[in-house]
Amino acid sequence: MYKICAISDFSAAHMLRGYKGKCENMHGHNWKVEVFVSAKELDEIGMVIDFKEIKKALNAVLEELDHKNLNETAYFKKVNPTSENIAKYIYDRLFAQQLAADGRRLKVKVWESDTACAIYEE
Ligand SMILES: [Zn+2]
Image (cartoon, rainbow, N blue to C red; front, side, top):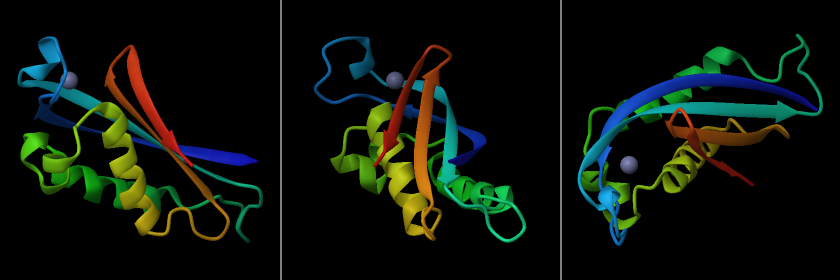
């Protein structure tokens, strides 16, 4: 299995509904997002997928979250903006843009601090 990774980041505020503790209050993170794409076979020029394609799709998704209060965005009005749910949201958006097409697999890792991350993959 071949696997490649592209990294980007965004800054946003959130507060966790139903959480008993400091994180129920508004606060911010600089989230780091790692996107992994893997494939059993490389394409005809020896790539899993062009890094440019991943970065273009990823940056379009993160641009919509950057410097927002996540709780006020359409998706996270209904879904609690935990790092787990942010990872799933980014996964779904990238999946919809065909990053997992042609037998490729996708994995999204979201770091909310240097020592805590959440991963979504299927
Ligand atoms: Zn937080």
